[in-house]
Image (tube, rainbow, N blue to C red; front, side):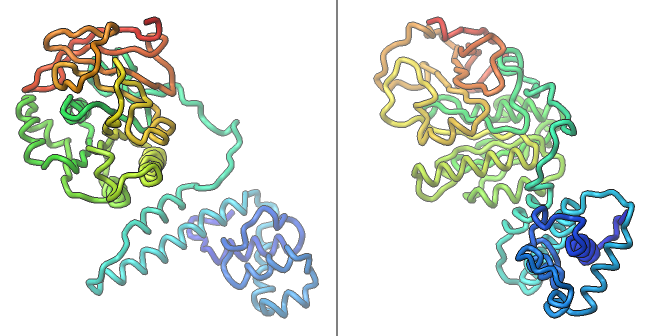
Length: 380
């Protein structure tokens, strides 16, 4: 069996030799993943050219002998050679990418660092089909975050998935993101906030108003630069031990908001959560034309992909903070110092059996509290 120091060239020779002798199907291998000149031998076999003389003419005597000898050397060794080739080839390619980017950085030139992130994603088993019998079932689809209202009435935040939080302007989205960040931090889990709307000094002022102690603040990481999603992904990928991240807010991540650009944004955020196995929270605005008594998930601005790719959708309803002419709701009554988080979608099911709203303590000076009640909406 090849040891951990086996090179891309070694595995390429083995695979080419096995294919030429007929003990491995050429259909199970992508020639682009094989090191030259061995890839040429596989291409010939794919074209049904199996005459050794013609193969030698194409790749040379030395390469042909090396491939056939490599195939003989592993007789009796059981291994999934195409998968091993893919993994080692991916490592080789990421090394080439890093060398190319590194050489530009050494010269003091600008370099697109996002290509490194993409290469890392591809080296982490991307593209493999795995038998279901070898996959460990996930028993817990939610992870508790340490904040009562969400843990009790939702089960926490979805693992490795995107949560979208939407509400009117000025009704508590940023306060909610800070509450989530604080909950992670109190459990000594790092949470990153990308604040494209408010400065980091304003956020830390709000955290002070929430009486968050310094030892907890150490676990809340803030970036207030106006940066695109690919840079956000790069920053997240290099923070060791980051448990979750939040973006405030979606429309500011792209230069021009449209269905197409926002769809790409949500797709990138969804993929980031999946690839890095991390919690993601995206804040979003309501569309300007909604006039319902209560908001629904269709009221999220550019709702298409946010609705489809988010595993959890939370809608803020805070009647004490904004009035834009909507009729009063008979389903969720106005109560002084109370606000609501409507659970509009949950891919993994509902704690209380269906959609509903969490009524939570609210103060304009400190944001969301800890006391909560559940209001079912499906029966209303």
